[in-house]
Length: 222
Image (tube, rainbow, N blue to C red):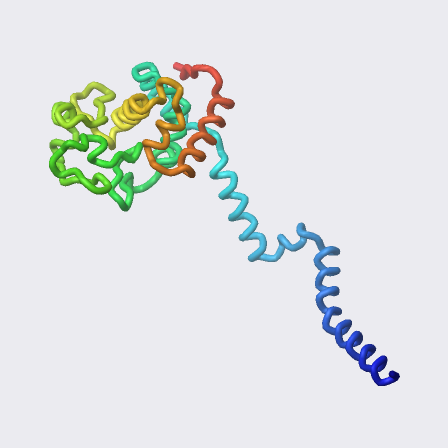
């Protein structure tokens, strides 16, 4: 019986010895606190990175120079201008993505696949929609009209160019409007733009942010 009790005491002593360092570290952390831990270089850098990314994603500011473009497209197609801003934000971070060409071939400020811009009835269109459309046809409104694309000449210069901000935004408004956004069917229109539930969620997040921050029509100062 004494041997059994002695063995149990020994086990407990070993357990206490093993736990002691953990308890000391825990006490150390609780005493110095998270604020002090941030003074450790790597911890500060990690925290700064996480914070910057959170702010970056949730920042609701719209660059002023684009507001006229969005609102002109809204007037033409009936698509809320804040929704166009949300798409611009998600697609190319307000055209700060460099280059404005995705790995799968989406082009321009609003990331149109060539076949969506020019028209899926083009004989070279299949698969993801890169196509093999001649450069001169990609921006020709007459060619686009023949193949039923969504590309639009937004600034009236006779060219429909996804790398022109007016053309790109007007084309996005054309596409979203044709898919229900002009009639309030936002989720359907957004999903058709990029078939992802996560994409819909992200667009609606920024749309709500912009509606809250810019509830009325914005007029730029002269």
